[in-house]
Image (tube, rainbow, N blue to C red):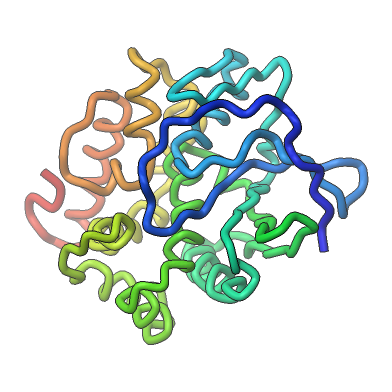
Length: 265
C-alpha cells in the first residue's frame, strides 16, 4: 500500500459537467521514500484539467481556467513517469478491470505495464505508468479515460471487456457500438476506429510535448476543450491549429492502414 499525503492547498470552485462515472483524478508526486507520494492538486472530475496542469508545468506559466488554478512556481507535475491518483467509491473492487484495460493498450504500444497500487486514501488508487503517457495532452487524456471506461457498469462496456480479450477484437467491437446517452459510451465508436492508429504512430503524429503541450494556443479554452483524445478521434474541425494538423496526419495514416477513402473528414 502506498501512503499519499493529501492536497492541502486551496481548492477552487470548479466548473465541471456531469459524468456517468464520477471518477476523480489528481497527479501525484514522488518523495524520497518509494512508498510515499504527495497529491499535487485538488481532485478533478474533468480530465481536461490534467493536461492544463502539465502545460502550466512545462511552460512555467500559471494556468487558470473554469475555477482550476495551477501555479508552477508552487506546484509540480512529475513527468518522468505517469503517477495518477484515481478516486471513485468502491474502486478497490474494480482494480483488475482497470489494470486489464490499461495493459491491453500498453501491450499494443510496447511500453512498460502500469502498476495499480492501493493507497491510504479512501476509495483511491495510485496508477504508476510509463512516461510515454505523459508525452502529449492526448496521451494523458487517453490514460485517464481508460480507467473511467473500465469502471463503467453499463452492460455494453462490461460485456465488451469480459468478452474481447485482444486489443484488435475490443476496438472492432467498440467501433460498431451504436450511440448511447452515457457520455463515455458515445466516445467508443471513434476510439475503436482510430485509437489503434494513434497509439501505434505516436512519433509520426507528433504526439510530443513540443507539438501538443507547449505549442502556442490563441485561447486557453481551446487547449482545454480540444486537447484530448476524443477531439483527435472525432471528425469535426476544432479551433487549435496543432490539433487539426495532427488530424491531417492521422487521416493519411488511417487511409494507408485501412484503404478507406475519406476516413476522417
